[in-house]
Amino acid sequence: MESASQDINLNSPNKGLLSDTMTDVPVDNTARARTSAPEGLTEAEEEELRSELAKVEEEIGTLRQVLAAKERHCGELKRKLGLTTFDGLKQNLSKSWHDVQVSNAYTKTSEKLGEWNEKVTQSELYLSASSTLEDWNEKLTQSEANSTTFKSFEDRVGTIKSKVVGSRENSTDPHSPTGSGDKSPQDNAPF
Image 1: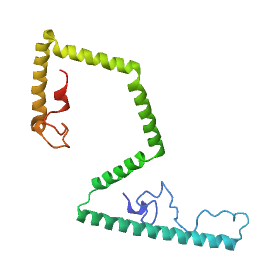
Image 2: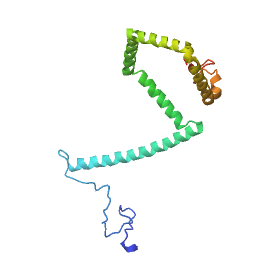
Image 3: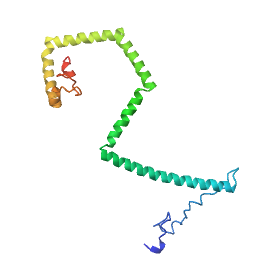
Image 4: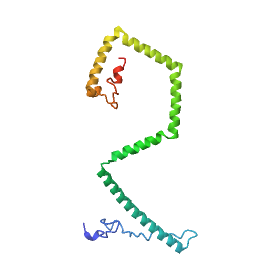
């Protein structure tokens, strides 16, 4: 490329481009698009407002730089203390979930769902269906014809479960996924 045809003005928005394809437009922050003074303002008032605007914009830039420096310093302190972004995220999620739980909407919804649950579980249809299912469960578990099939199935499920769960099955940790006893809820399943 010819160096004579390139724009070498480092302040130009066209630097490095061919000069015959684009013309160099001067960038002048003080020569903003000037229109006639807004109604009710004299030229002196307009100039004073523009000066104040420039000063405020400069202060905003300075504050952004100070904030960025403070955020970097905060990050360094957290890193030295061993606090991670994940810890902050967990804390924010916990606080947000707490805020949701104490909100009026959540409280009213929970109360309403509780009322509906009570009405459903006390309804004649629910009680009848529950009783019928309990009867079927008892008949299936005590049936001679199905007992060998279910026993075989139960053994296979137990074998697969022990391979998947492993040593966690005998855990007495109350926070373990299998509960606090020696048996998991699945061990009490009807079949």
